[in-house]
Length: 127
Length: 107
Image 1 (cartoon, each protein chain N blue to C red):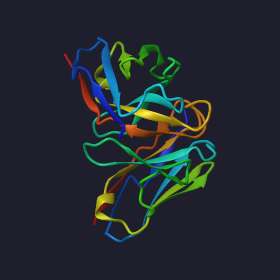
Image 2: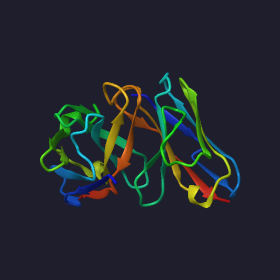
Image 3: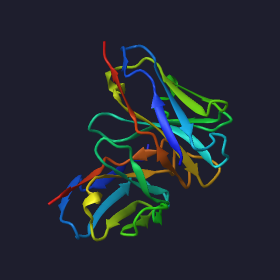
Image 4: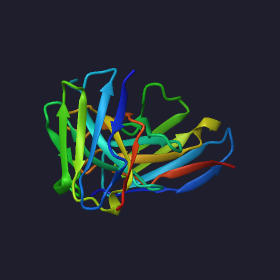
């Protein structure tokens, strides 16, 4: 069974960079059918898509966060990662990694959805 | 960005009821609409993709319908494990966006 597990610091200071890694087990991150995504959910609020990455490194970002996001993938470790720079209190959220299934050429238009999720990790931005 | 508006934001239902949740997109998204269920402290779980296709392993009492801008998630014969928050999500255009959620509570 596919499993995803987020890891990274639970507390980040304002203006610093938030770094998270997702480790995939029970399946290969290099599968051609999937992208791999990050999403977040501020406490008590709704969901926001951050970005998704293919095993080749091809990435789609949420334009509202694009200038602050760096995505990477390490196929040898079956991991992918996100860095979010210049964080503020508004970036406090539960961060989820997820497998992003696509039924077409891309994951930002057409039939695609998040079919497996990690358990989520709370990241608090505070001094 | 495409705005996704869900209604109601919360509702109460009894076991065995039929529950209907609606999701409206701010512009046409064809059938590029997914539904997720989230329980407290847990990650979301996909129920329906492409507006009406049931994800493998999801009970058939969940049904999705709609196209263009108006979509519906129906839960027939609501079971105790169905009390949760439900989100819609459009996959038509970047950025992918979610509705604000509908909390289904026990009456």
